[in-house]
Length: 471
Image (cartoon, rainbow, N blue to C red; front, top):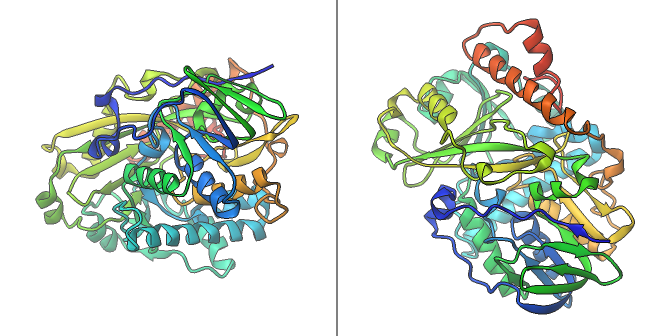
């Protein structure tokens, strides 16, 4: 038997994210040709795979670690996101429901430490990632969105952590240059990053620490065994342990697809307009989210672009997705509409980039780690739900402990164990239901942003989404 992996539709140069085009991302390592032997083979050269490799080198420097990346390191979700950095305390309620209150508090604290680790990398000149810890704002733009953060804030305060501060409407407008949102909170020790610079920096750091990386080496299939065989187009890797760190692309495996669904997130970036942004008062590197079900997330880059994303909710049938998840045919039309609602003064600023990307989601909106059934030497991590920059450093610790069979708090985490997670409906019911729910969420968002009340059917359908009611 073998596990066949999905081959990515590699984005054309002009369809890559602003981040990847900004750094002129290119392969710096050779594709795999011939045969290579390793102790651990990691499938995926994004944040999860790179952090896992670095953790393994810290814990077991004698181990031979190889990463097989289908395209360029960071070309998947790691280089297509909105560049927002915040702790897991915003999801404390969701994490607690999976692992319990005590461990959830510790995991949230771990992501705070991860932000500190990123800060240390930049301060020491190890990775230039444009990290700006000017805060993360979680806001409301309508009555329906008010207090979306209340439960997470209350649980955080009960845990004795002081992570959030309430904001007034005046403070929000002063910070963001927009009056669209009028209530919210801020996590001060959070902010924004250039995700492609971070991915490339982690790649270079991993190489410097002895990790072997082969870019443009998509894994076709994996033959399990005491020594696993991973086949690419031109080569073969043999390893005692395998880590699957390919986020949404793991939906190719039926065992994992039962617990995973893939949605698209759409992002646009404007032309540089620093003087205009300065005039409206948007000067710092804070990251901003609203509280729609199809959340808006945005930031100002250091050179004065606006990067504006939206979790659009396009769903992949059977988890299968292609070029439309690189760049949508609508070229970010919904994002442009929302950008101009939030920032009317930017109507004349050109949209310079638009791109899309797949998000690997679990019903609980919390990542899961485990090994494939019957194959303890093949481990995986998935389900970051679009929140990963401060979370994947923690994931790397969990995966490294599973690989090394260490008995510690990482391998014993409540995030480990896919059997404890709920399964999604089978296809085609999952896809058809998701389309109905997505349409209802869009209708509800559009009504509620105008402070209008959706009908009972729309409300009922929108609340069928994984993770609970739309808030």
